[in-house]
Image (cartoon, rainbow, N blue to C red; front, top):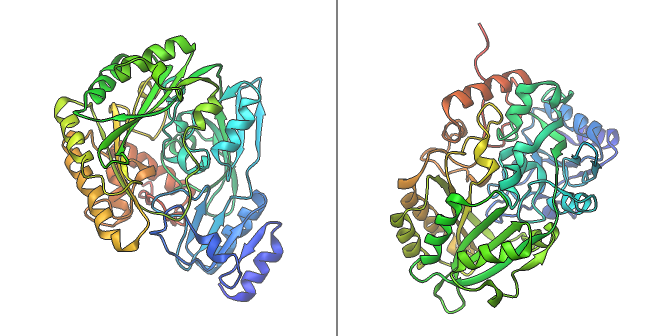
Length: 455
């Protein structure tokens, strides 16, 4: 794309266009993960869907690679493409609510903090991410694990409609095509640039929860937690994070959310902790916004390498392994995140969504985070090593949202996508891809290539 074409694109849009020569280019191309260092040819920040149409058509005319960025929190940084055109939706963050239908209409660049605040004013909430600055788009298209999973399922399960711009620059409504809507529920960004998400919402009243750190010791608290989650009510969603305490020992951070009376929530907390929850003032009655606020904004700038696997359960052998590897956590910023697959999330099936990891009870992620580039090899190796050992308990597949580009033995994107989906799901995704993106223009993702043409 030469300067004349870039100038023409800039004149045709109401949004902003950023070139490599602009002072804010380096900031605009940054992602959450500073391991990613790519230089697009041009970055477009659309003001509306028509700007997205113009950007896609301009990229097609110049045969430029395309990337679509929502919140920018992909650990793989796939939205930023070297030498390509990046559609950065971060200026499109409006949220509108239909309280009668309990549906939130969310612009493609919105973050969960935008959604949570607007829905909370209506006494509603929708299952979203546990960090407020995470983008709605990436999380929802790949799955979406959060504190309301028990009552509402994964974020993708609540996608009841969407507007997207397809590879030829056509604006379509996913609700008019059940196959496309199914594919967007977990199939990633393979089918177009989504400019609006329609998510079902739920009445959410008083909650109880918070965050507390306790010694991991021999893992007894992990055993209690695993036991509780096998029979827990939908309203209870505790996550755990194994981390390094200031004195260098391993500790467990309990992130607790309970939708219901404080007394019942405190009783669950006491059961999980093995002692009276009143010893921890950080555990208290509040709102969904309070629960969403227990994790800080994730600052851009650190170096990250994450690997994960879904497991059928936490048995004694796996808990022992997790206790052992927790002693090797390499930095104060690193740890092992264990998220339950619980309640409504387990009751959907592959007819509803392309997301497929519902037979698992837990998702185990080794999150290596550091600042010094001299630590790159060690940080990467630690994360890979932990997940390699945990895979003996794996239910199979990989999680789209936490997948690194080189996670598999080969870096070919099609192989990684095949690892994420069962064959029948993968084939159906390929068929949808063939209809909406036959030339695989949207391939900077966990890519599902177009399926064969129908005979």
